[in-house]
Length: 132
Image (cartoon, rainbow, N blue to C red; front, side, top):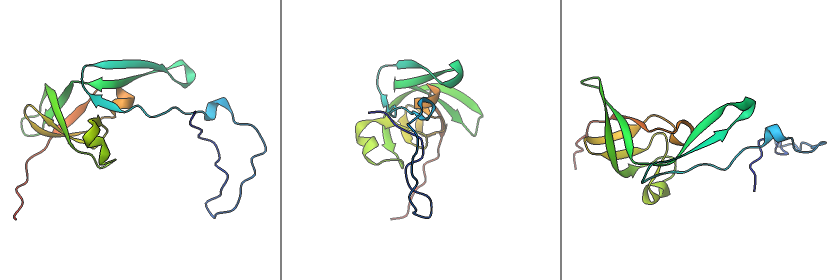
């Protein structure tokens, strides 16, 4: 089933919008691409105006920035630790922007949108010791 980005039938006030025309092709969206941890797989998608977008279906490596030394390293992704977008994504190994991933050099927060950019960029985060 397609995703439709047109008027949905309700105003912000709650009033009804009467749709007096058919759905247009330019209002058509696509289903979300859930980027998983695994062997590298990418897909090229044509967008509006003839442009292209590279979607990462699965990724194995991430470009991680170390803020202290200002260096970027390509490191292997081991696991997803936390995802505020959806807690169930952690269990399924899905990476989105804002997700905290476990890498070879430590934990990092994803700053790119892998399903839109086709690459995982992340920033190394310090471990905060909590008093318990």
